[in-house]
Image (cartoon, rainbow, N blue to C red; front, side, top):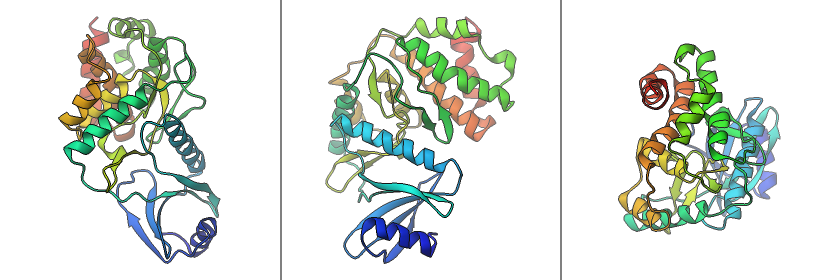
Length: 291
């Protein structure tokens, strides 16, 4: 719970008195609270880890980047900082509802518009960020395959080996990874990605407005976000149909979906352990080890 001094400090940022604090479920890494003032509600994330302020700052920058696209809504960030050993991120509170098919159709159109947004010719982003609580490198590359292998697959494979979650002999060589990916990766233009688009990272407001939250943004292949939506479910046919009006399926999408999901499965292996090993090794064997 918020300490009285932190509660007072955040109240000063809001120019109001916090009358009530309620815990909000859903946060795996940070604690989240709904803060009530006499006239409004706000969302506040709290984390006591020494690296939390950097995490919140990259989240704030990611939301700003998505907002630049003018394609889809994100919560307004009202402030962030550190106070008495606690880092915090303060945002508007979004009143949500269960999305209907029309809401998800709108979401599909707006996500496609975001994927049409780009600011340059290179893949990556202006800064590194996090995927869950793990570091995510966004060093710039001019070629998509190079970016995906060196900044996504190799760091997670090395981490899995270091944690003894993946035997070193089961990790494909660098050239094998590049060759395996190039078989299926087309030439693509950098698109703005959410970067961690599972069903827990979008909201639909009471007026039917889709919002993206908790981004791990960078510029990459639009199919990466779509592969993540299909990994754990939570997205409707109306969402996919609307999206496909802008980005029709391209040959090789099934294989690319596997290869893009491999990154997220490696992340889950490194975060949550051996239960994700069979899925990871299955994809490694299918696309790299037996090739």
